Amino acid sequence: MSGRERIRGVFSSQTGATVGTGATKRQTLQKTYWYVKELDNGALEVQPLNSNHVPSGPKFTVERESFLNSYNPEPEFYTQYVLPVMTALDEKIKRGEEHRNKSESYSAEYEFNAAVDVDEDNVRANFGLGLTYLERGETGRAEGVFKRLVDLGATYEPRHKHLFNDFGISLRKNGMIEQALEYYHKAEAICDEDENLYLNIARAYYEKGDFDGCRNYLQKSLNINPDLEEAGMFWVYLQDNGYMDEADDMTEDLDVSRMKKMKTKKKTKSTPVPGLKFDF
Image 1 (cartoon, rainbow, N blue to C red):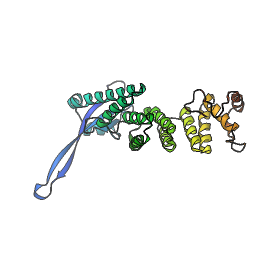
Image 2: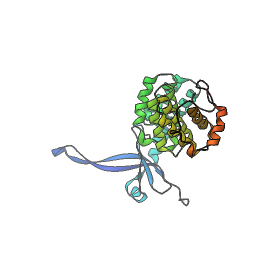
Image 3: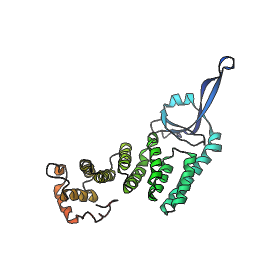
Image 4: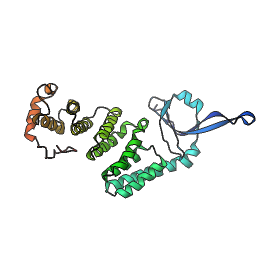
């Protein structure tokens, strides 16, 4: 693939359609625009443009030979319509994220809503809007964004994992434990194993009162990274506060001696544990 430039840009396809009935019946051609990106394996990733000329919605792949036979390049359409809108959309999202980082929540809401108006399926804009509502404690409005995000499953990619994690943490802090777990498990489904994600899932199960789920995901976290201090301290906390007995204890697959040494760092239920995104 290194010997030539990869295909990327806007292409169109045409499909035939029948309109009218009887004497008014006629055949027409319908033109559809797509944003196209060539993948490492030579296949083409194709995504439709929405009414605002932004790539949006589910993606699918087309083999190179089939693509070249069925799609036509539209460089002028891309330059004149698509690129300016995509650039403006990205700027809106960046401004929203900057406002949210500065705790300027209403300015952030304005920018994220403006972005969603352009592309209602945009993952970053929706997460930003949901996080803004959660940070203001507006769980009802956040629930509406949550439902919209649930329907975007086909557009999620591994690079969105941290957004799931941040949103899950905010959901949990607002008492929306079931929603937090749903988001964490979506993140789990789109990324490789991650000890920090598993640790946050364990914490959500703990708050739910599902201690089997808590121990299961805590063990997953420690199996990936036995030196993750926060997970080790959480494990010792569960042992020392009666959340597991010898029958439940799963330390046979872990470094027991290392776990026991961590008891010197044990915290009480009211004391924050350094490095964790939650308190015991």
